[in-house]
Length: 436
Image 1 (tube, rainbow, N blue to C red):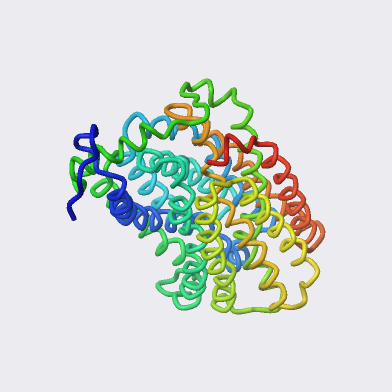
Image 2: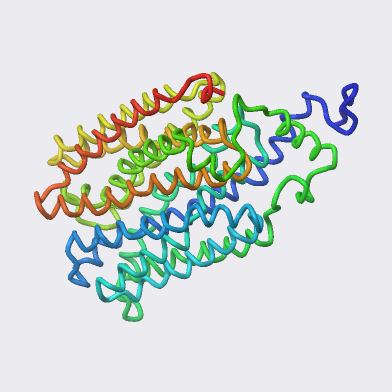
């Protein structure tokens, strides 16, 4: 299709051409990143289904499992900010490829674990290896899309999170059942081995496929590149901090970290413990547990896309985070009252999962409304680092509380309270800054 160039903007396509350009960029980048995130999240949470066999085979307690699952986040937190700064320096193509290959190899190595210490070390190293992937991709998307388009784009990318559980849970259950005992390996060992392969292959593809930015995209015409860059250059923020120090001294970055920490406590309490909760409601087969676990995550895909698209359409962010979060808290609390019924438990966990997951694409639009450049790279990573304390707390505390009270209910109610607290922090963010 040919377009008439606007006066005074030689080499820049008119506004009528922009939907086609952004559609082209979206189809080129987002499905690929979604697949990468699916692989990353699957390698992170497949330990939740593996534990159904792994704990008995290795004689691990729930507390050992909770600590090991949580140590992932210690490594993640320590290396997240440095990882994002390296990405900005060496480019997304090289660094994201390195991240994916390394975490794939370490995730596969979990099949050889025999002692708690080995489990702890590998989970820590897996977190260190994966650190920087999510904030790195979020930073990379700011190189392509202006602020008002990002919520929907981030929603499309972050579909990998619920898809990993929707596809991965039945797949993991099938692997553990079908491969159990083959060549002397337990089902959970085959699970770690087979599900590590996609991460390594995708990492190699990143190095081959991914451009570092607009100017390196060989599949874009020169006028398309100029149009995309023009839109980024004119995407003037209400206020914009560029320096590294700004990321560490801006209280809003710390507020974002606390908000995301509360959201992740809810997310990981579901992601790591839903198979156990469903089993305790009366389902024995790993395959059936995997199939039932897919339902809340399938619903979350729809909720994420609808909430992200509506937030972009209305240019409103805060209430698109608060209202779903409150629904998520209600679902967590409700699940503790219906533990004897598999169907009722599944309904409550679905409400909780949809509510929490639907907030993420909107939430991750917020940092770039007041940070840019090096400050954005460090700020997004710092918020992720603070937030992942919630991942550690959710996995360890829920394991300890379950061993102590012989039920996950106390932990779920505690995390529901954290979700409610996060809503007050969201509403404390100035609407004129974040509603873009």
